[in-house]
Length: 119
Image (cartoon, rainbow, N blue to C red):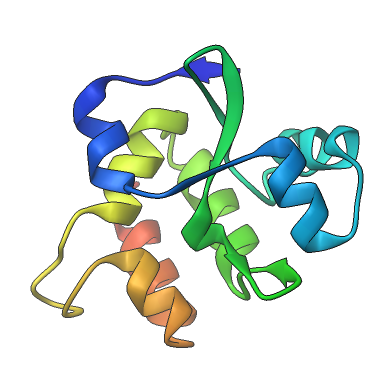
């Protein structure tokens, strides 16, 4: 798992441990690690513990539209930290951040922008 710098850590804001994510999703922490390996979630090591941005969990499921966006970002060559910075950095054309747009059910629009990054 990736360790991140303080700026990215602060940009994301609220984090959940793998155990907390598992509890919300109704799965084990090992399944959370599998979701990270499968690019359905992003996880990083913070203070020695695997953590996932709280914004990636909506109720008892992974935020709708997030896995597809993570796949596009990975295909564009974004590593974990770069993807987190992109998702949590304000974009005036959305408006707001890409993760806020995904949460507002505008994932297709976000994925289009992500795909354009590859060109």
